[in-house]
Image 1: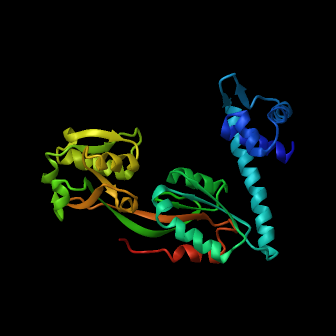
Image 2: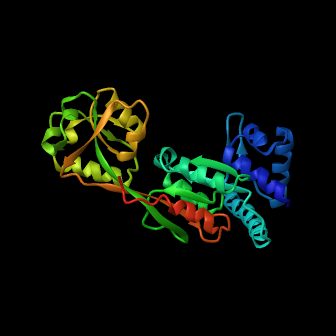
Image 3: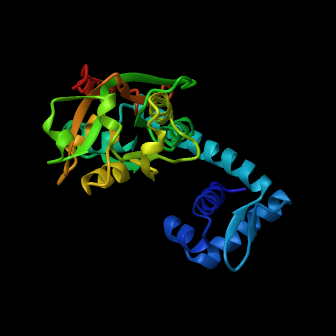
Length: 296
């Protein structure tokens, strides 16, 4: 079994498409298929099911994928530790980010890293907090901007900021003319809420608030993400609770207003693997710590 076969299989397992996987690892598609088939023969089991329409992992393939990612990550880590001990500079850093950090703290953070390490290569990927934690654990990324979670396992984390959730109302609307609102002011308004199957802690909080004040019947529109919510508000279709970072969105047609009786804050922080020599370099963590702020 060769390392390149593991890399080829991981690409197929993550793309679930031989054409895209071949482009990702820069080899011809027929050659990629041959390498995966050779790996399956060596293991004596099928890792993938292939039809004309799709590629899927078998149970054995899913288990092998987890181990293959771990093995490749360990090899990368070993090489990075060796370079660090030898005094080599950081050559690449991979950063995960949730949307609020993407338009907030991430740009100045990247700028400072680039000034400190002018020759460094940077790769940025967006995702949910859960996705980013998994990628840090598997060492696919070095560090990530995430929301605080109850169990972060063996990772390290520190908080950067706390953001309030406020009520988004359309510019020029009667509610936008007032400095502060009460729950009673919402009773004649159309409300925009989330409708995802698995609600986050934040979304559950507001769902319970709406139920507590008998406002569930006011829900006229639902959506899956914050961008959609503020778009609906901007279109004048209703009101909805949104985090402060949305004030940084360009061309917004909404205002954020405090509502008495609703006091909810959400954190933003940075997580990394304590064993990752790239993330644990003092200069990288020190750069991140310069962005700590008490809130807006």
